[in-house]
Amino acid sequence: MSTSEEVENQQIELQLLLQAIYLKYGYDFRSYAKASVKRRILHRMTTDQFPNISAMQHRLLEDVSFFETLLLDLSINVTEMFRDPTFYLALRKEVIPLLRNYPFLKIWHAGCSSGEEVYSMAILLKEEGLYDRAQIYATDMNQVILKKARDGIFSINRLKSYTMNYQRAGGQESFSDYYNAHYDHVVMDKSLKENILFSDHNLATDGVFGEMHLIICRNVLIYFNRELQDRVFRLFAESLTLGGIMCLGSKESVRLSNISTIFDDISKEEKIYRKSLSLDKI
Amino acid sequence: MSSVLHEKRFEVVVIGASAGGIRALTMVLSALPEDFALPIIIVQHVHPHSGGYISHILGAKCALIVKQADEKESVLGGTVYIAPPNYHLMLETDRSFSLSVAAPVNYSRPAIDVLFETAIDAYYDKIVCIVLTGANHDGSQGAAKIHRAGGYIIVQDPTTAEADSMPRATLAATPVDKVLPLEQIGAYLLQLINRSNQLWHFP
Image (cartoon, rainbow over all chains, first blue to last red; front, side):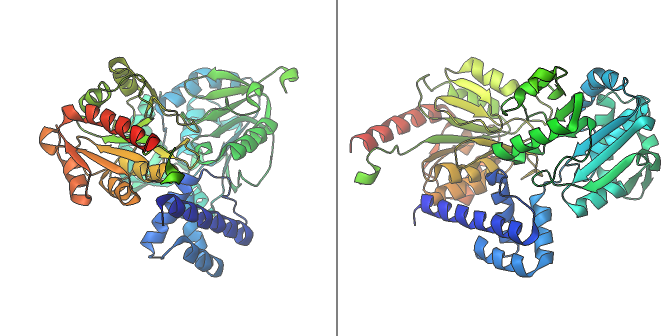
């Protein structure tokens, strides 16, 4: 069999597997960028010694616990506190002044994973004196990861790099004030959680659930194909109040989407956008 | 033979480099003329916060367009693409790029293996794969897969490498087509592409 035929066959098997996941469990990975999904599926295939992708499909239909393993494989839960410190600096400088105008703030952290960046936001809002008037909705499609986020317990190994990030992100206090250390892990301070609501939401299948002033969705859209990216941008545009802010990951952009004109640049470098105030663009 | 008469033997060049890589890449790329027709895709290990300095350095020293690969960007010939720091760079089957912040592979993000493995899904056996200097073993598994898929593997002669473990790891992992001292790789690549194009256009 030629390489091209082999690759083609594997792509067919992969699409059938994603279709099976959708039909059986309702999670829709069919519009994800395929290279990353395939790597993860093949990794599981090798680890669990399946002869091919199709063999995984049968197991997946019969065994819900195997599906849960795959779901964890497929959702990329690599994150850190104050990831990309320059983004948080820009947030302090360019966005916080705009948010001060609102008496009450609704913030949506979409695809929050294990919560490191949500707690980072909570810390930043506290230091800027805005936390008490904020409601943060932190959502992810994966319940297991959401529980981790809700618990706010992180490995102590990473604290050193988090502390450095915090300082580079313009942190004003001592970072250790925000957690309690126990042996090999830290527990984030309870007061940070008071205004955070963790809940289940899937960007591929679910809709708008409230009017937001600020949406943060970083390093999530890189896993989606163009069509799904457009769906999510429309969802965010509908969800944002006029003049509301949308923050993407440093390699993500709304500029190639078909609703690009709805958004003005706040920071081109840090991918911070503002939903236009002029109604004729919308 | 007739079915492949007008197909090019090679359609992409993928390169992996780590410690000492900037100097090695400069030497390889500066040997290529501005009408070099294939896309060249590079993973060079860098510090996560290092910004885009590599594309500036290489761009200043070679005739081709050098840029950081963007998410969803379509791959074009005659262009050198560099993986952005702190992201894995992957190729989709429609020959566009995608990025990921998945865990480091071989302690590296971007990882050479990730680029090499996904290149097969986009370019099948039409790949020239080059492994240059480096102090770990990233790239060796990906190169082995490209070899099995029918691609062409060039490895920098370890005795000419600033750090020899990466070329050595590749030589240990897979049979390769050519081992060359650094200063010959660029010229050889050019010759290989020219020759294969002629061969496949006028059999």
